[in-house]
Image (cartoon, rainbow, N blue to C red; front, top):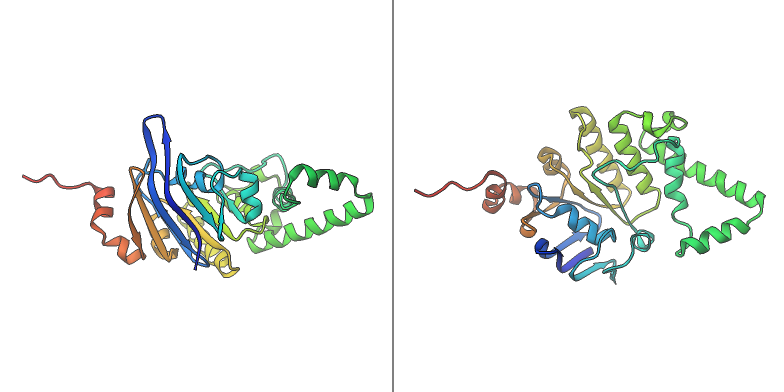
Length: 260
């Protein structure tokens, strides 16, 4: 069953077509990889789907709803969360406070209305809610084995743990679909291996995962399906085994020999 699909999605920047008539789909409960050479349009596609940017044309259907052009906060509340290539933690806040930020983001469909209602609550109710939010945040930290760092500043964590904290914060918003943009970037082999185990655990929760990644070992080992972009166009999709032997994919990454 498809949880997400794009139909003829296109994004132009002046004369440059970054995403070109792409039909992309994600099956519920699976891990889908989105790969391609640098500049292939992967992050641009993520940005269209998650509301960071708006497509020039085409449609985005999520869980049966047309979400094309909706703002990022509304898409998030509908059940899509994401991380970014560059870590975007609140480094001056503690680890647990970062996850609490993700939980607070679930308040109401209208963020301003939600904050107003929160302001009107009595001190007793507010304190009780904060305790509940703190408790849920700690549950996510235990899930990622980060609970012993709960009171550390986020910026003091090792790089790999900062990456995992960002994923924990995204999951705290209780998404149906999680986008990970190069989650293993900058990680050493041990951190990457731990990340693979984390993605497996996330899938076991019933969360559908889509990831952009350049680490082909990681992609081939954890993805059920893979879509490949090159110059903004989809050139292949299928299982890891299909992609591994696809001639167009091999040419995109390695180039084509010139005929004599």
